[in-house]
Image 1 (cartoon, rainbow, N blue to C red):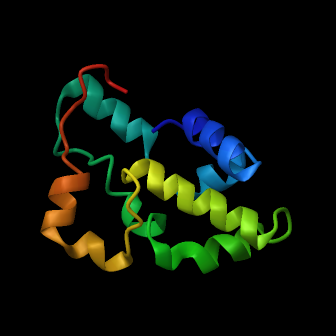
Image 2 (image 1 turned 45 degrees about the vertical axis):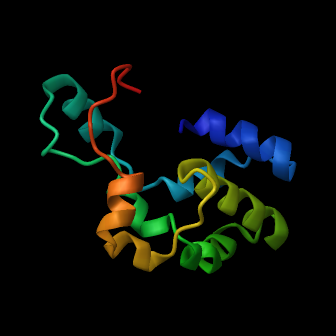
Amino acid sequence: MKLRDHAKNTKKLCGERAKDIHKWIDSHFDKMKFNVVLETGNMEYYNPFSHRQYKHHKEALPEVIEAFKHKYSPEIIECVFFQHLRDDYQGYLPSKADFDDPEFIAKYHPWKIPENKW
């Protein structure tokens, strides 16, 4: 999901667009490498889902609260954070252990070049 769509959802559900939180959650995504994959078709070069193992799980909540406590209330941060995860995982809230589960990976991270190239 694109940043603007995440922000639109959290504005409606949490009262804040909080683009800075969404950028933080996706900070390990490498757009330049992803563009190379789209241009070359070499899907072994970069997996666009690999960044999610770092901050796309419930256990990252304390870290995001610490990072943004100066700007948002803990309730807003939690709402934005969990909604971002729900957006990316069709309502599911992954745990860190899910990223070691082949069934989870197969279900939520099927890596193929999209027809519309995102």
